[in-house]
Length: 298
Image (cartoon, rainbow, N blue to C red; front, top):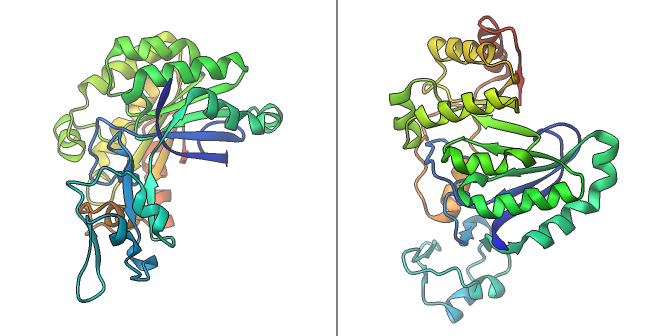
């Protein structure tokens, strides 16, 4: 079985316990305004253009008429007709790259197993991220099954926005759910991500009832969801669900801006200021007032 992935990152220490290899799958059902991996939203390969690295040689034009240059040296791609065939990338000196590669379960596991000794010594393993791995449920299921054949600890980072019957398929093969919880207010959740949070909450409660280990991960975006009421509800939710081990705060960062530029998409939050360390400590302190669980930075 093959699927589109866009990165395999080794020696990760923030995606679950121990030293881990994180596999990033393309495709996501949400459309978060602050997404820091906008290239992962579609489950198809996409050409990324870093204009700062473009030297204007125009070799890409010789193999593809979808590339255009203006009088000021600006480089543009006709995204509507681009199929990400990759011919232009082969001619480029580094400004173009393909994000997304069809890869088999076998090849991914082969790469992951290179660091098995580190997993054993640190109680680490493999983490599936994205996008959202639940978007590609059949591939994710086969990948988790194969990981378990090699006795790997498994974690999955997900928004939980999926059919329960699909989540139920993978639960026997998942040791830890890194559950991204964006917003406690349903209307605001829909405004910020394109979907409501009812299904997400239902699935979270069901996973808790099954006894699955969960880390509640909460992105905090200044002027969007950094509200006292939101912090309170996060804390209360963590206390209510006994199998949430702790809460992790994910402070906003603006890495998505350059990525949006690279894929020719507008970035929605140009008015957001990156949180300071003082701000982050205040987030943690405030949420801690409403929960018995540990609250820390992701």
